[in-house]
Length: 242
Image (cartoon, rainbow, N blue to C red; front, side, top):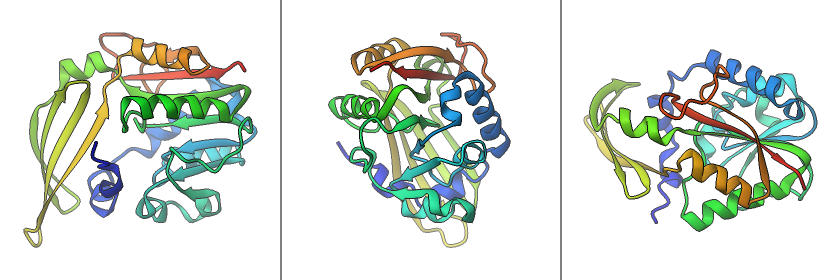
């Protein structure tokens, strides 16, 4: 399978997603800390932290929170105050000792990038990094809602780019293919995103199979209860019981 994520999270990605809402991230973190107090103390890893949109408020509440991302560009755009707390690396090969973390957060769907076996192995490995009682927050798509509301094609202009997107569910993956055209020069490139589309029930089975117990499920960043039909997100709070 093409490792599309190695080439995509660059300057164009930053320009396209610069509109993401910091207030939404702060609300999501505040709600998460209320639901899972384990995230408010001890070492917590924000995995695939990007520019630190969630890491910044997390680190404010818990100074031992740190982040890891594969993209050197996104890490370079993180706030200066966060730089000492950032690592660059591949989430499949984490430089972290087993049983040392109070929590792990995966915000905004950084799970499902890999093959079925690799996704399962990743979740199993993450569970081994947690202390007993440690919490893994998995912020993921609600597959049912996505399938019903999927916009198959659109064109937008943002950050100096014209973006022509095609979206489709192909087998068990949601695939987004984009043609990016620079408005100033006309230069274009093709990029893609491809994520395994797990249903909530599949995520529950994955969690159970990898030693994690679900504390609660939420359907949005405001902490709303999960509705299988209408919630845009499936946010699972998973606890390692040892």
